[in-house]
Length: 322
Image (cartoon, rainbow, N blue to C red; front, top):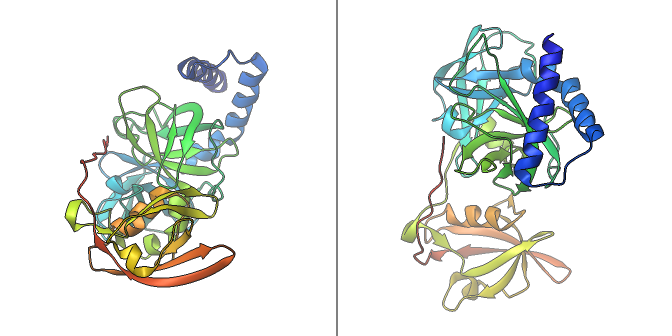
């Protein structure tokens, strides 16, 4: 009976997501194929999805109890918290690092394993249009109800966020976003007003910050206003990083000799995948800070050290959490 109920829920969810997206009506075979794939990996996904802290969700990703969640769920590194396993068991845990820019956080379960876990998706594997599903504990952990499933599609994916049409609710924060192979490809982060305005911390952000997060580092967000360092260039996403499209006058970039069409590959060892990566890597520094930039000019790769200037004032940007 339970398998039948899950099947009906999956079919209804898939149909609803197609209507939300305004897509052409999928064939019954598409429904059934997607349903079969989700059912094949759902049991393992449910076993690894847990309650974290006072109202969030997380997912175990290693047999020794490493948990991925949202940074606003894990909170400050080094805290002692309680997690809830799917069977209701309470487990003590310790918060590790957090990366506020992508809302990525880590937690370590205490006690003996092995713990049930779900595998991580590979880097740069999330594409617009692919099917996915989320699990979470909206409204908080409920043993009788269990984790809640929603199926949908990826709308877009960037280095700092994934947007899907899997409708999220308060309490889903920190829950896992899976591909149809049962791999974790994101962590539930925040919502907007439309039903398809659902955002997730991408697994790429965890991969890139794995060692600092595991070590318990509290990675700063981009600074605001005049407190934010500035290189003095405009950039666009490039296949290898970001390409410089304009060098502004009287800026650090001019002094350093950076030219239009240079491709910035990394900043202080942090690899740049898109303009969002670049904004964080530069903007987390104060004016006057020195950063090391690796760049490509023509066919040659070079490095230079630049003392950042002061960022121009711009309008405020606010992120809505949940």
